[in-house]
Length: 153
Image (tube, rainbow, N blue to C red; front, top):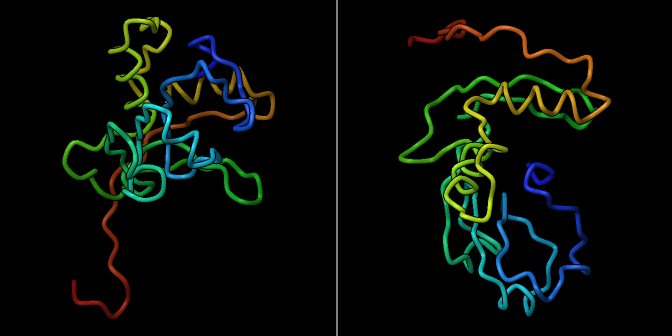
């Protein structure tokens, strides 16, 4: 997404003085508190903690159990995720919140962020990340109801 907007990666220590607004995805931000107070902060997150409480705007994101997509586990395996629950209220998948924010920003080129489904983000990642080049989205999973042995539900 950053590449589509023409952005480059910067470490927190290189965060230029000309940066006035920062979009935080999640709750962790390695920027010192003094610099953080100087920024207009927009947070896309599941929880209200850490630097998020200082955000001018906080957008609710769906949690991992509410999202369709992929996750890379601690062993480096990419795994598909299927939502177990609907997200609460107006929470969106983080990628969708980023797309909507970019489309609402006059300086952004909305055509570059025209994703409508997590599988489109996945497809772009398979083209941009060499280690993902052989991965496929596969088919959607059907909802499943499980009952554990001995349960009464």
